[in-house]
Image (cartoon, rainbow, N blue to C red; front, side, top):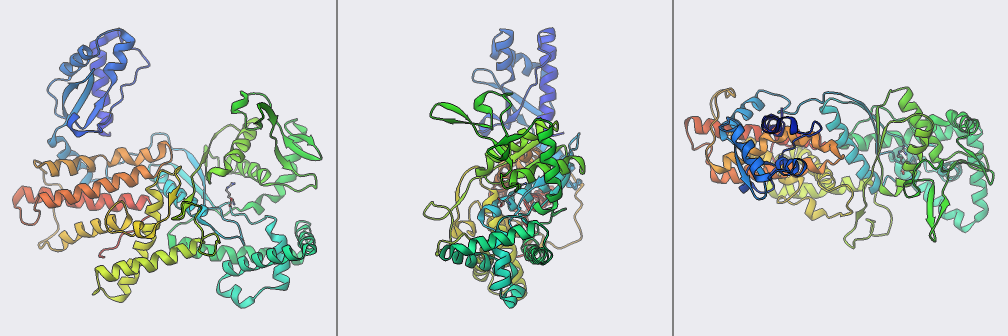
Length: 585
Ligand code: ARG
């Protein structure tokens, strides 16, 4: 059990003893970490909340509870302010927790009691279109959430819902037949398809007739034309293999790649079924889902406010020309995930601009009788130094591959400066781990809803809230053990903590099991990133204040145990964020 869990139990039974029948049956005492350590390690406002409900004096109630708990092996208690109960954890108790952690691969992170089947939809780039910075955010956040959800015991299915059936294929097909450079395609398929797409786009602007020719190619594809289907298939294949290289480099892997095209055959029957059930109807030739009036207008995704009036804002599922849309595919995708995979919960890690789309499809799905825990895990934008959307110098969207290449190149300079004598092969490996780690950590240390400025120097700095700082901390801890002679250490020997810096490091280490599950409360990996940064800082303060190798006996052993657990926790925590560690740097 986590420490707040233990304290909550103590508090609840003391409250029960003090208040008896008066304790409301629905009351749950909650204990949270104190923001200020002067007020203990944890605190609770339970006495204040209850005093209000039971009409008694909060401080007196808090005092009675503290007296009840009395002399305790876990903590000492203090009453503060209007009736806060503050808990100070005893160093011996932390020492015991650390011993238990040393013997536990999970480092004190418990598995959830009721595991769910969770489908996580992330990354999802579009074939033959650039994978841009928005996809970077989705890819990195989605992967971190998948790792955490899996580790706490959920059955996680990751699905890369690539955009492999969009209108872009009209231009691609024509371009493939007329301006493709086979050699460039073999060398870098993603770039070549992108070039073709962009060039045809420009040509269409100059010669609008070409647009009709491209549209005709698209119609042929959708009608099942053999030649166009074969080209489409190759486009998707080469794109997938190009994408796989990027994902390998990122160490990100999917259970499935069911792109939009996978759902083609399901679309017509889905729309017909909805018409038959009266859930969708014709409007100007298109088939649409309208409000059913079941929620107040300000919560209704099928209404918008227009000059003070509520106006229909339908979700179109079939265009007047018979074509299907993004929303139609997403409804079919929901069906598949629920029926085939038995999903209890489906998470979409997609940028905030698609919020309305998801509200509409989730609501439609509920109306279709499939209620579930569907979540749009939105995020803000990445900005350039000018605080405008991050672009290349020439104004193009920045491709993920370019970002990774530059990160590795810049990390190589950091490694060169720090360890000029390292063998070249190792330098190269370390640069990859540091560069990619830096991009990931810069992303994951942000609150996902805030827009953040992409800044190379900041994300690669060896000081501050960065991957290199954390990686370097790990390397420093590990180097202590390299200097140690003698056989393996016995991690079951007792630990004692007396210095403030030791106790503070222990306090943070013991908190790991609390922090990891919190990432999933609101799908925020930055909670874990911030914890790891605090942990590394606490380690540095400890290492400055408390000699390790120069100390002796049980003190030395205890300090080594703190070092060992710091290294394990940093490695594990960064691993949950998808960030690797070098042995040296
Ligand atoms: N391909 C889409 C885009 O690039 C993202 C897809 C997200 N997933 C989904 N099921 N709609 O914007």
